[in-house]
Amino acid sequence: MHFSRVLVALAAGASFVTAIPAVSPTQHPLRPTKTKSPIKHSPTSGPGGNLKAVDISVKQSASFWTCLAKTYQKVVIRGYQQACGSGGAVDKNFVASYNAAKAAGIQKIDAYMFPCTGTQPNGVKCKPPTTQLAEFEAVIANNGMQLDYVWFDVEPTTQPCAAWNLVKADNLALAKEYTAMLRQSSLNWGVYGNGNQWSGIFPSRSSDIGSDLPLWAVQDDHKPGASTVTTFMGGWTKAVGKQYSEDVQVCGGGVDQDSFSS
Image (tube, rainbow, N blue to C red; front, side):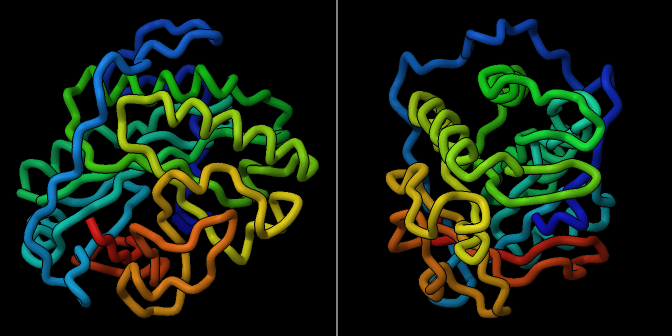
């Protein structure tokens, strides 16, 4: 999820693969009336029994998916992006990428949300957190997506969209506003973050935005295995996933490499 690949601003009014129902800024249409689905474990072949995985933020070729399914058990697809031209938007490639992964036989599929946060260079205001989250979850529901985890991406960026550039106390309050909603969702939400960036966003490295949620940690040391994470922050002491190599080529496509325990 390195910012050199994820910051793709969409013009306001862009059309998506599926229609998004109108949502009131104060409503979250997918509040649960059921318990969360249990995570089902599948065969693994990565180091230490971990799932071999990649995460993507761009459209991939048909040959990429065929190749990936031969050696990787999991893919994490960007489903929502900053899109600071419109205040946040569903990734236009999300549904197509999900369908391609399913058709190729990828065993496990996650998605991540990179919301619009902070003050944008172009002056466009980010949509309210309730609206951004509702837009994302509506596409998941309307397309019948079966996702193991859905990840809330917390990382700073500057261009073309800015992320988490409010004063640190306000960033903390905004992050907690989001995680409070994630806890109420019927989806299995977790948090993606880098311990070495944490104190640059929040008041301190120990600032807790939701350590009760699963952690997908960034530690770009080229060592696979979720259990090898050592750069913790925010109250977490273990990670479900680890992003261990950023901006690499796999099966002819640009990805990040990851390990997940489930």
